Amino acid sequence: MKISNKMIIVFIVTSLTLGCTSISRQLGKFTSNKYAEPRSGTVWVVAPPQLDPPSPAHKNVYISYRNISDADIDLLQEMKAAAREQGWRIVEDPTKARYRLRASLRYFGEVEAESGGADVASGLGIITGAAIGVAAYKRTGSGGTGMAIAGAGASLFEAGLSNASKPREWALIIDFVLEEYTSKPVSFRLSTGRDSAMDSNGGAAGSRSSMRGSESSNNSSGAEMVKKSNYFPHGIRLSVWSNQMNMKAKEALPHILKRTKKVITKLLPI
Image (cartoon, rainbow, N blue to C red; front, side):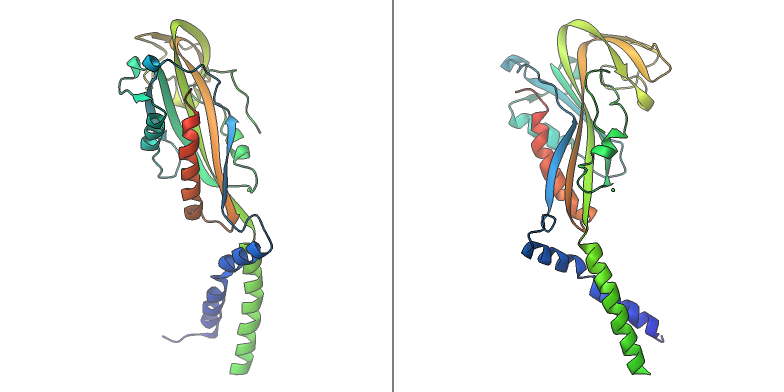
C-alpha cells in the first residue's frame, strides 16, 4: 500500500495530540489549576426529608432500583449495603416494610462545567411517584513536505493542548422516592408523569386500585392523581458530578460511583 504525505501528516499529528491531555494535566499541577486533578461532589437538587429516627424495632426497609438511563449502571447492591452499614434490616416484602426506598437512575452524561448537573436535573421534571408540593427544584520535495508536517503538527498540537486544558464535567442523576409508613392513612397529590400511576408495591396501577394499606383513584389525565395511603412518598433528587481537564466518561464514572455510595447512606433517617 502506498502511503501518501497526507496519511503521514495525520499519523504524526495524532501521535502528538494523544499526549495533550497528560501534558495539560501536568502543567496544571504546576500552576495549581484546580482541574488538573479529578474533582467530585454532590448536589441535592431535592434534599432528603428530615425524618425522626425510627426505633430499633422499626428499622427495616424495602429497597428497589431501576435504570431508565442509557448507562449500564446497577446500584441496587450498593444501596442495600449502605443501608445495612447503618443497621437497617432489608426486607423483601414491601407490604411489611416500615420504610421503602425506590431509586430510578435518570441520567448519566456530560454536563456544563461547574453546573453540578443541576441544570440537566431541573429539566427532568417532577419526581414520578413522589408527593407533589413537598419540595422545590433548582434550576455544557521532502524538504517541503517536512516543513508542512512540522507546521501542521505544531499548529494542531497547540490546538489539542488548548482543548485538553478545558474542564469537562459528568453527572449521574438519580430520583429517589422514600416512603414512610404512617399508622393512619394520609391523602396527598401524587405525580405520575409518563410512568403512569404507581401502586404502593412499586408496580403500575390502573385508574383505580386498592391493596393492603393503600387505595388510590386517578383524578387527572395522567399528570397527577390523588392518593390515600399508609405510605407517604418523599421525593429526592441527587446529582453526583466529577470534572477534570478533558475528562472522559470512563474516567469520571469511578469517582462518581464512589461518591454515590457514600451519600446513599444519608437517604434513610438515623
